[in-house]
Length: 286
Image: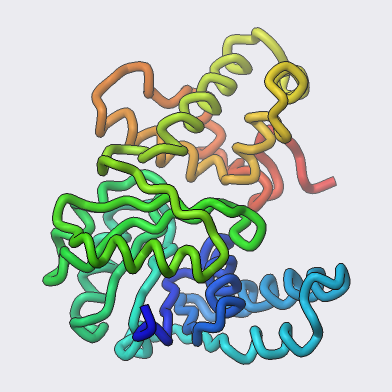
């Protein structure tokens, strides 16, 4: 673990910039990479805003904030990750994209480096298989928002070495997170195997006219003591991400109970992706 000094993060979206922030806060030098300069600028600004709020609440000193920000560099070039010790991939939940990224990373990043994926549902075994170092590949699934949520769900592919998994545990704990291992590399792992069918069922409840959006969320908040209703949560996660995970569950497990609700499919087709697009089950453009 002492050999881990520099971390690369692929993707500057809500997960990528959050991972970058917590890695830098843990004292690592971080290179946040994204193909879009605009995404990098937005991601870096999100980190600045997030750390500024922590400073205002006296949870982070001004000096520590300055140090944290100085630990972060950004780039649009994958080649700039060649010397990092660990890469955490946090791209869109799309299997073709992730496989392409891991093929590229494997060619560029030094052979002794570890390659981790923040995938929330896709097979780690399949991702590892496209690299020449499958024993150094594992799943490191953070929760959103990363700076606030304590859980990291850890997934080993069938090729993942025990040494890799123990390093992942140490890295997770160094970042101030709680390491929870998934014993099998199965679609959805732990959290999304349970969470996404609940969200999908909430969408079916809306689709079938059983209750409106507000009533569904109120019933689940007050009736099951959840801090956020399932449709609000879906909007925060991103409806495209929810649909992608449901498709992984449906096709990976072959059980009709995981079939995505047609209404969820239509919302994604309409570009109603939740908070990030301004409209989902709720309207955020007011």
